[in-house]
Image (cartoon, rainbow, N blue to C red):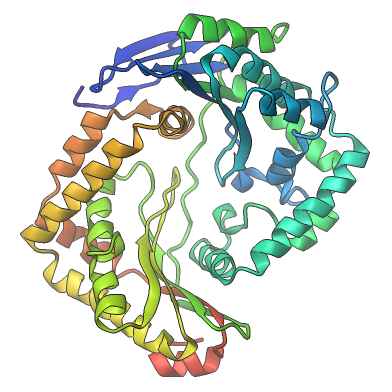
Length: 444
């Protein structure tokens, strides 16, 4: 396989063999539920997930935090099962179950022995389709979520990250925090969360994926039983891209706190999921801050000892992305670390990367990609994100081939675009905005 496999919504059944010998099948059930499986020979467990194509970016005013609120509430009981019943179902078989809310999707997932797959599908399916969202549970979980937000607010790295995204996507839904804010969680009403649930958790908006010891036809029968009685429907259309209207402007955001260490992020808007330069970005990211041999790690930590943690990151969404550097350092070291980051940006813009750096980066990326797919959780996740995101499945061989095609000239071209964009800086710790702005020569 040397090209992505399209996953058209109108195709009732699709199947193909991956480069690693695993068999992938996709079936659209009459209810519009999409089921994707990847059989992994030699495994005795299965990872499965119920995906809903709704994330924090899809919330309307008055609903902020509702998607994450729902993630919590779906574990609190259904018409058939109490919260304890749900927990016992998985604990009694040694299985794992959890959920995750992101900016563009929500996933309820589990990993169990192959013999326990029917139980996992039934219980998670019941949670997704039959939660009652009781008023008493709603009030209890509001308190739990406020505690979760308080925990995040005590983490300077989390606070700096939220400030960075708010600035990078100013005025865009992606700039809002996934979990909402304490103010929005205190204000949101059960009726709003219930309306959010009823709007987005329809069968034709749900994707169910499984990887490991799984038989596709048997798995489809289990999923179909969950949605028995649902009306016939076509799958819900995928997300419509909504790019940021305006490019970000340079910003410095400082949250003063009496901490021993400062958390700092510096970067810009990046590349979206559909950008053909994503493989080039993976190489640039690896060279700049993707490992212990990266330029930033070597310069900031190994040569100068200015920080313990330093790395670069490149999250991507359907229509937008970000790129930046994170560092944790002493307050007095912040200007020096920023100076080094900027110098490394300029060096990459001026000179690109060497052929030796290109070779090492490709080896790092290709090895990490290959190792990650040894895990059934990763393969199950790849299926869900492929279906809900770009609508195409990218095989490992295709991904490796794309990375292998990257040249030093490609990296230089991308650097001259990406690393010259308006710079956003967020800092949390024992520094003052006016003093830092003066020290690094930028506006506050």
